[in-house]
Image 1 (cartoon, rainbow, N blue to C red):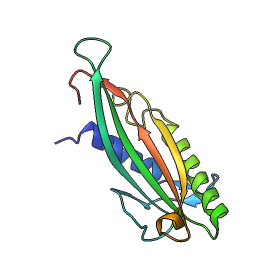
Image 2 (image 1 turned 90 degrees about the vertical axis):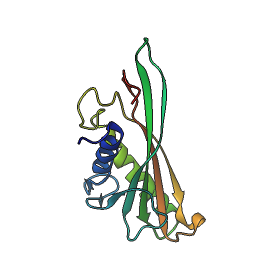
Image 3 (image 1 turned 90 degrees about the horizontal axis):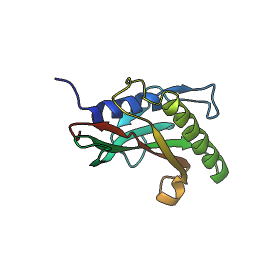
Length: 151
């Protein structure tokens, strides 16, 4: 049995996060460091998790067409000795991941699965949330698409 479109997109996002960014601005290798689901504290650094947030549906441009917008989130955890280091590391890794996500606007899934990849992000200081010495990058990803089934 095939997996749902929403799950396939989530796995594609995970794959784009779990990449080697050693030659990019973050200089981090994230291979095998991204899980599906959300955690509160990373077991080691750097680390990432990707998860599904929600799914909205509206009527499409014509009768019998629906416009869907699934939302996903990625948390990126990076080390840093002080606040400026943590912010720099989190922002750089967010930038690298977004560049990887948007390099192919279909996430490599082919046309017809999704119409685009849109990202919003922020960087937070883990100390503020009881995770000392950690910068946290947060990326919200939407992947709008249209279909005749509503899913």
